[in-house]
Length: 211
Image (cartoon, rainbow, N blue to C red):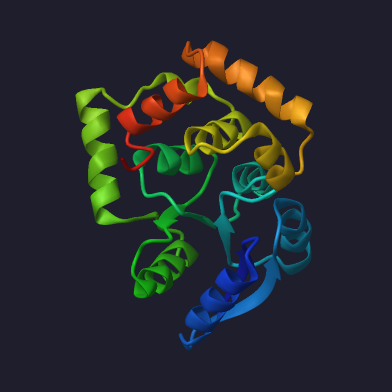
């Protein structure tokens, strides 16, 4: 039996994933967490075979939780989940130690395949995404100034690029407005942009947003 820890800040999403996974006779959901902080605690208690980790959550994001779990438990097998299916999100998750990456846009049966693959200690990537990653590496086009952003800066960058305000971002991520403002300043410096519109254009240019 493959024991899974589900991590997502949306109750409805976790319920759907739980029902889907438990429809497979060899998978059970050992626990659920709604934040990166609780995911780190539950991982120690449950020692799951696979942790299915949403990357975008308030407070400690999924990437930071992934990093901390892997730092203390190098053998942890984590499947990263994202609402995005672009190469940059996948590359960041894999770099932090995720064994697999799956877009929430994937077909439901892909989750079962991904969990069983990661549980066996093998990497899982959607074929189209794997091809994009391989092509970028071969052509040397994978590097981007966005790669210089920290995980939290990248999360703030994506929200700003989608047109969210500093106040909204601070509320959602449980940060102070001044902290988000500091992230915004650092993002502008690293990406050499001057306003939010330029951030949006940069995200579009790198395929992080749909036009």
